[in-house]
Amino acid sequence: MTPRERRRVIIGLAVLIAVLFTGGIFAAILSRNDTICSDGKTPVGQRAIGLGQIEYRCQNGDIVTK
Image (cartoon, rainbow, N blue to C red; front, side, top):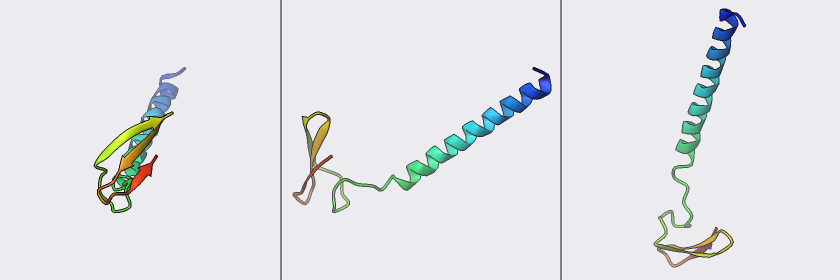
């Protein structure tokens, strides 16, 4: 592998990492306001009901299973 090819591979990897990092930031910004409860507020309580399912109790009294 010549130095020119090595430089091209390293630059390609750096660009790929930068694109993935930027995509992760963009995805986090888009999903930061997603809430479980229909009223848009955070749940006041939660409990595990088995096999990875969690039951959330919302501030308006709703119960949401996720």
